[in-house]
Length: 607
Image 1 (tube, rainbow, N blue to C red):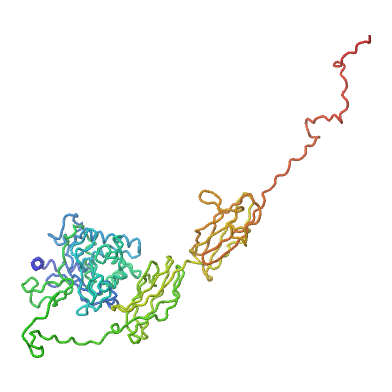
Image 2 (cartoon, rainbow, N blue to C red):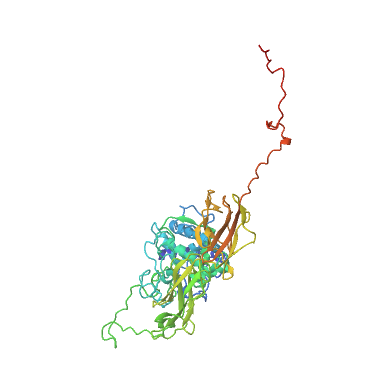
């Protein structure tokens, strides 16, 4: 690695004047705070942290990250897929992203485009964060399903140069039961992964060590709070929420701009490995390439504190009992933080949590932090997490909210907003940074309902037998005086007011095949509560009939339908003999006809 660093320095020294000017130009386009020193080396600005994201609430716990900046020139157009593997021209190698890792970023972008289109998440932002957090999963050292070949762990977050985050997962993700560590290619701390984790490769698991799962989780994390990442202000807030450092922000923005200018796919395991980390230390006056220089720290180690080191042994000194091992002086005692004193959480008066789908819960979840003696603890962060198969969220659209306890030790979560999915779920309250007894709150989302139905219009609903009703049936549903939209309804032609059985005669609807049906289910009111029924027809039965409309919640309305008999045709009138052109003679009234001598026989003389 020292030789590699030396080559980088030689190359930079040979082009000092050009590099200094180029870096200055690139930094202006890449990100605020990116500058060049008088030797042409890129660096990011100060490491001041933004004030509004605590380590426990960030994705990474503000863990160390890689500070390498991209080359001065991005390949544009980008090389072919097989043209770069990290060697040769710096821009070509750095622009290459391992195939599986690149696929995970693009899949995450596609999913978020569908799930949260207003976020406008570019996959290049995931690539920039993946580069800074883990060097693209250590150059793409992943299995076929996207899982890292070896775990990628950040250092212990024990408060010694880093944030203090005591174990929250009992070592389930990081194997550490004392302190949390950032885990996986996107470096999530266990407490954040617990709620932010996603299954990106469809194997039924949420694994922070899998690049598909981690990339999708990072995408959702960056799209919280309705942030639009095409807006520069929202983009900055999202990145700072991932790791709360201006230096980190500038480094990520630099890589984002670099990848936007051109990138390409390279084989897994061949990606360029980053060198410099934010927790690196170099001895004063010693070149990084010179013998004896401190090598860059690796994830899981701390500068000046090599992993597995032990205190040196030496001759006996007064006070060490002649053991030959110096007595380690006791660590200076520090007063416990408020979080350290919390023994458990209590329900602070939250009652029944029930709301109709699409409505806001009237009751808000509240928890009280207490010591073992039951004394209230102020200034403690409480994380409220919605768990279970539900689409209920807190105000703002998130499933997690962190609130600090007040002087009475109470933290009140934002209001819950029910989605369309009905059923039971829970809200879990826990102390951020402590594994202490939390409080679960059971909640229920009921289906949308109406308590009143009124007919729209006042014309009588009539038709003749065998015809169709000209007037459409329309009703409006309300709940407590407000329009009741998306409420399930049923329409039935019932036998009578006292007999809800379906009538087998009289008016009817038609199904898709044109057949008569007298019950309609699956109806839903519109957003304004309006429900318009299909056309009604009548069979040959005349009379008065009843149409009953009911909704979820018990609203009922009966409407009278009248079917009048069809008109009876008039009988044919009696013919008038005076106008009959060929009347039939009536023997009883006609005179005796005259004899015709020519036709009568002759009488023979007698004898």
